Image (cartoon, rainbow, N blue to C red):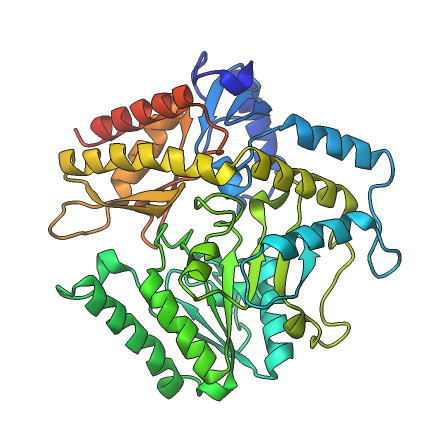
Length: 450
């Protein structure tokens, strides 16, 4: 079975069939939607996919966090088939469909946001989830501004492009919406000077406090939006002590705390949501936005908050035609069922234990590995020219990614300087596949530093 297979390359990449389709892609699609991988998927199971030429790839990208449950889980397939035979769509402004309600009830049970009674709305993408979280916060507080962070990625709508730090995602797209202010994210590996972790956290908290003096008075700030582990920013975890300080600031100043869990959600971190760690530390967010792995590849996203917050939203400012699509809701309900029954957070912790032990061993061996970090299976390696200077090494990352691809392992870079390789493998990966991937990865490192 493909789901238990190991990487196997049988043609030069791209193979002839893939090359023909990629050529068609270039003629039919905008070049701005880029793909640097020389493969065209034919079918996928678990953490593996076979391309049109019969090459078998181990996928450690997982649709950039979409496929935590794998490519084609049988339970999801059955649910999607069953729902599609009844109806594909029912817009919630016109007729209620029960799948939306059932999924909202499940999200209200498990989302670690503040409040005893919770409510959930659905949208279609991570960017929509983040934008709706901001709209909800503004509607509830009556305030116009938000605070985001260096390294952040929140999407490509006009609002979320402005929220996103890396402006390569927004070239030529301004002017952007006003009222978005940026503070420094606690990137401990690159903290200034020789600060201890506690001193660095104090430094970053002070940088946030300066926003209220230099950019927006606190009484005009509706929300502070944080990724529990930055994705595009380089897989940088938000330190819990810093999160607790931000929660305290929000409580003191009447600001809502928003957790952007588009990429961190659905068992990736070793919890169903990374902000469960926040809640355990007494710093639960007010609003949670999530997407990607919520429905195993069907397009849907969710925003959850207390009933108090949700019930104060002005009528008409949230919602949309496809929000909470019936087929996507059916898939999402099965994702939650499978992840809870099969303990996907536990799977993430088990995988994490192995990769972090292996990677930390590499860190001792290779001068180009500057930092190994993550939470659960949202983890990454930061590559540098040397450990002393910490200068970003994008070239070695590109070489590693290209070499690994030719051996049947898909890796992807991240980080402001493109010098981090992320780990987003489906959590159903087998032990043998994990070992095979680690072997190819180290082989790629060795080949790239000669």
